[in-house]
Image (cartoon, rainbow, N blue to C red):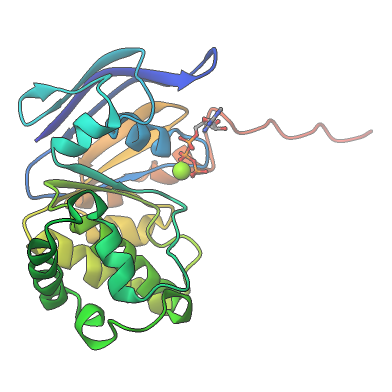
Length: 247
Ligand SMILES: Nc1ncnc2c1ncn2[C@@H]1O[C@H](COP(=O)(O)OP(=O)(O)OP(=O)(O)O)[C@@H](O)[C@H]1O
Ligand SMILES: [Mg+2]
């Protein structure tokens, strides 16, 4: 489905991604984990075309989309839910979700059918359509963001840190939502700071460190790697040496 090879990308004169390789199979849930600044969000931004890669290929359904515009990538069926997004607090759940398909706003009937179909997957959409988004819990807000992205009927959803800033109770809401996306036939590529949560949810996982892929495999294999925590806290390239003891 997505095959990334030799991907280099960065900001200004600085290379952040240095030869990233990533393979995502159709219909799977994939999770990228790694310490802060590892380049996880940069991978998603590069796939969705918000950042132009310097080198490498991003083949989606057999077509190399590296360097294409965000509109072209959206058209190819890839939708991103960024790390910090937000809803219109004064608009209702329904209005926020419908915003996702603003480009199809003239096709009212189509939009309503799509909303109703999503409401079968996400009960919040049928139970509280008129609730202002400002009154939702963190987990519910995320659900509305996901549903909004699904209005465009994507093949692939890129989720950046879906659990960021949420309380433990909301984790179950996110888990259910990701399962709902997945059971709709959408391939999921997510980035997650909560390693335990991400690896429990995913089929396959990639561990990134300092702009490179440190490990990749099934989520189970990655969970069982004894040196996983080294990537985060031990032999990480960014770790500072301890200050010498004063005499
Ligand atoms: N717009 C930008 N301009 C310049 N540098 C950036 C920009 N965005 C990110 N960076 C730098 O690129 C590196 C990788 O950032 P990125 O956001 O991809 O990491 P991340 O793995 O998603 O981290 P986090 O867990 O904190 O979200 C970091 O050193 C960051 O400071
Ligand atoms: Mg990030």
